Length: 446
Image (cartoon, rainbow, N blue to C red):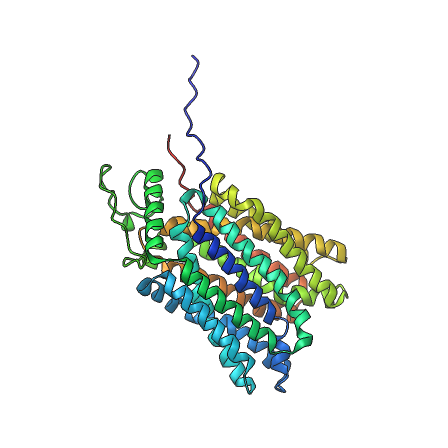
């Protein structure tokens, strides 16, 4: 007996993205570009006040520490006042803190002003993630997150190069230029992201989600414990009213923790912070200099090839996350990055070191958009996810802070190999968590 082929749903047409997403992507480039402008001169500027190297390094760390501490409050602010206002306010705070750094009279003023910049940074980071969740069509979330991450990456690549060139013009100028570009970005965002328009776009996204899931709420169909299972709405329920730009209801972190994919995302975000942000920035340059005897040039090239690998992956990983699924992309990317980090500390030649660094960057670019999209799938468009997004961001920031500290202790006690191996162990824990997680991508039903 010949079985008839099972009808399959047609692949959805590629949806045009709202222009507001393009504004957010462009703003991300400007923000990352400005951050890169001040990064090369910040330690030197701190040293100009006559402080030791350890104190100069603290000026760099205080930014990340402020982001970590203030992240929960950022989530609360987003839920109370809406993503748009907190996004703009956060950019303005960073702009003012950057300008204040240029006029700092002593080391402690510089430290305080830089810490305030971290507060503003976590505000616009959480708010931007919330806006992308609400405005991105469910079947294009991977593509949107790839574009946003790619924009940040380009800014991070171009910024340090421009900052190094400007260093000869004085240590204060990059801070003032950064403040000016942020002010322009805040004005563009304020005029381009109109509240009424955001409300209409969010409503359209919710209707698209409803069509995919079969009932209101983008979290429909996702596996979760019965303790937090919401009652299904009738199939013929009337469409929800347009929710204002400032969403009044919010998703509790406790409910998000009921999703295995959210718990896995917290672990993989921690692993990504530990490896891609922490170890890469703190340990890789030292390894290139001390073990490979390559000097700062080799260290700089290694960071560049990591970024190139990430950029290459971002050109297609978002699309695959929207078609293949979030879970397989996260697992694949984590596996590639974890394996590369384990090998990186064992390399003995500069060319091999560059190749492995590029592979590690490729892995980071493979799972980043899928991980972000999975969190967005869980939050959906019906409610604000400020606290949920803040917790996700905190997990990555915590890994960024803890990773270099733990790795430094291991290097001092043993060697570089075990330190990179420890990063691989953290990544393997993330892989295990995702193997047990549920896929969050909702596919059209035929």
